[in-house]
Length: 338
Image 1: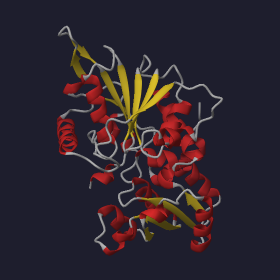
Image 2: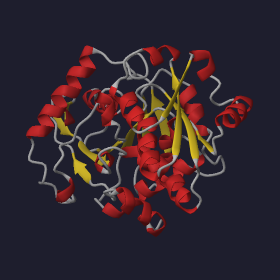
Image 3: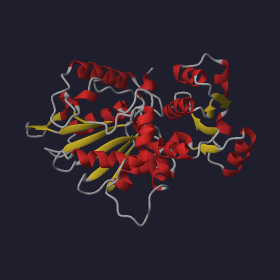
Image 4: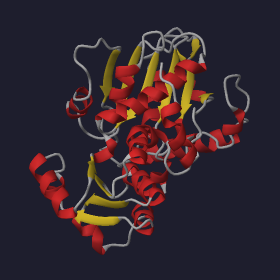
């Protein structure tokens, strides 16, 4: 089990509220009725990584915690990374770099965006002195090409290139710290399933690689974009093929048309869920750090909303056996809902 001394200093510098609490989720849809008319309750918990920080929450902190700690020992002068115009990764990294006085270049998918009014994500990056480079779709597709990256790094005079979404091997270390926190919370019997949204694959890989059988029986990823086969490849690239893992798969039924796409049904679900959670008296569960639960559980339609919608649907379909205990990992990213 990890010790946290190696990241204590960076956590203190950014006022990270770790460990994030586990919260039992109260919602009407956690009960389902079987074919015999008998009602069954599914116990749902949420790992509230959205509470880690008001800007750099969730898996964005987890995936960048180790690189940031390394930067304290050997700080780069210029970091470059990639993302779309609503990227939680770029938003978090831009904030990091502003706080650490590191030059940051964000390569943004969408050349046309440079002539449009910035959305709030891009406006924040601009305010944090990020060098915004807008490229067309064809150029952006080369973001993993080694020759292109070498040329770009030289042209930009960048010390470090961090992949899209922060998906690199170091990200798995950060996810391990999260798994350790869940184990240390010690809430009893293992979870039947752990659910989390999947975008660039590293968070899912980190959970798969580090989750022991005494914590859960299976891991379910909920694809946030259209990418059957593709998302599995992204996860597998980080996994040690010689290590036994828990059963895992990615459900591709809840992407709602693609990344950052939504429907009226999903928007309504998120809105109603947030309204219901805001009305609940949250400091009522035994395993919570109540001082960290002033903020009600909130979801958005890009990542967490799709994951919770999927969970609701699976429960109502009878996917989970009666008396199952399910954990949803809240990967943050609420800034995208703006």
